[in-house]
Image (cartoon, rainbow, N blue to C red; front, side, top):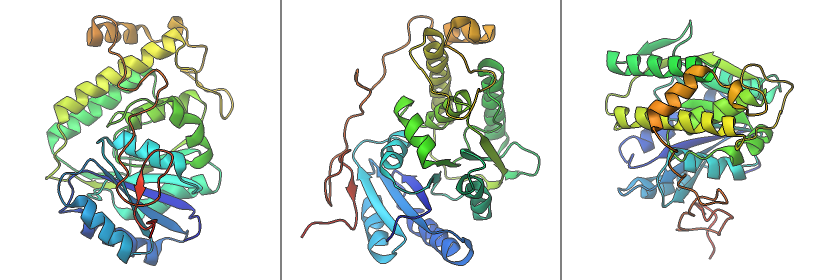
Length: 311
């Protein structure tokens, strides 16, 4: 398959029930309604059930699909590894449950392919969105995004919606600056993009909550708070230096001085950590532990890609 316009990554971990029907539905949509060439990359990160076997079968059966296996879990780890190597013009991802209506995919990637915008996100919190989910998730989501706006000066409306895309050239500049390996990866990338002056396009989406979701909401929220504190502290100390990729950025752009931070953030950082923040899980070079090659030709990050087997 030639290099596609769009590489759609579907991160999965122990998703043996949803994987096949969701991928088949996505393939059908791409064939019938999507005007650009696209590839689906199933990113199995640390599954212990039959997810990897199902992913391999789908990759052999469907020409639009490839499968990549990594030993270590983490959505952020999988996205960073695959996006860093993809040659597609636009790099996207969506959750395997397809909670977001697929009709939003073309509005998500079109501004990036045209060059108008650099990064695009689906938003459940904008006018025009239609969302079905429980009050607990709604409250936590709105509260988290309010914290981002209040404490970090964020201007995007929905950091956590599992429906995003970025231009390859901008991803190559920002991905080396990210450190989170899990759910905070989305927020980290968005904050860095705003600080770099990139244009973020928002697409109101129709979204239905997955009632079988196994995400630990409280643990994820606490990890997100620690991630916000780490980012702000890095900007304050100057240890996170973001290049200006598209003109002067408003708000957070600057030299990483403490006085650039909202005073509320400094209080927030002390409340979250109470002391010096924990060391990152990456080593001093920022490299993550490599995954185990299962099948296929060895690649730079030791990923295994279905369909690239040696005889």
